[in-house]
Length: 370
Ligand SMILES: NC(=O)c1ccc[n+]([C@@H]2O[C@H](COP(=O)([O-])OP(=O)(O)OC[C@H]3O[C@@H](n4cnc5c(N)ncnc54)[C@H](O)[C@@H]3O)[C@@H](O)[C@H]2O)c1
Image 1: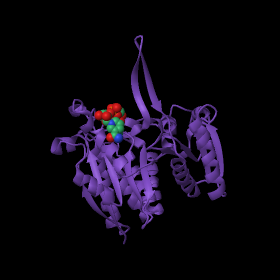
Image 2: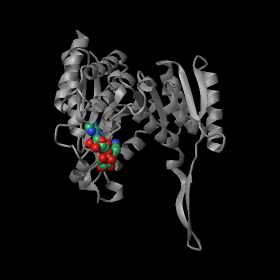
Image 3: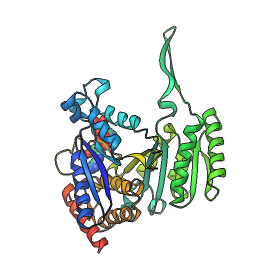
Image 4: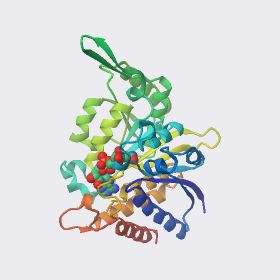
């Protein structure tokens, strides 16, 4: 039986509650003889600040660097609103992303049939939706220099952000998207603004070359990012893998997320470059939602986003596609049976808490395995 090294950072608020349900799923995998996991746990966010005065300690950073994958819960809360900028809870996540070199952010938008009526769009537009947004995470306008506000006299100021991409940054993110498309429906759409931005011209040029030279088996298309936003709400099922830069990816992945309903349902993965010796990528898996202080500690959090993030970990870090499919199927089945946490509650359904949703998912995994 394979053994994988997982480093867990539950964080603050509902983070420990939803990670707690992943621990139960890990136990189930072990008891079923499918895989075992060596699990270590550390502190990140506000709880790390309380313990060490930093949003993540150097010792925990070292453990994250050494692990096969990191599972991250959520950070933040009103208790730490006033702490210094450099040690605020989010700084822990930013350091992990930076030090692990996580340049590719993967956000699937999957509409489970049982939740199609919960979307703000018509059932036929979203039912069966399964797309994957691949966002460049470490470059572009959020990090480019100069980045400043200067006084230009006459009571005027000038704000500058710099959108900047080098060839290698575009090459590696396009390769990630193409590799993923090969495991899916073999179609990649690349979104940029080549009509008005030089970075879009280069993005388009590099993406076209990589797709043609290295992935001739894939269907590859370009779409202007603003048109892509429209298409995502008009006919999202036309896409399979969508690759784009940091800024457009931020916006487009939020649009895609809301096609499928609640924040409590959305998983994500962030991947780095493959290790030169082992070929394994550094990786961090986390739900899209935050620490939800309004419901923390009450046993009300929806654990599905966190468990689906672990499913992505099985698929992308541990090459356990079948086990990942089981996790996804268990989620679909539990929803089809009418179980709902408060955030996705609908008329006629049965409202459950975090622990009961975990019970139901584990029972469903057992049924799928037998
Ligand atoms: N990656 C992260 O750790 C991350 C991301 C976003 C926000 N935050 C932090 O989280 C704190 C709260 O931020 P926010 O309220 O803007 O966003 P949030 O995602 O924590 O919550 C937004 C709303 O969604 C609900 N919600 C979120 N996840 C849920 C789940 N799993 N089950 C049921 N309901 C859920 C919450 O109860 C709340 O009403 C802040 O300190 C913020 O900085 C952290």
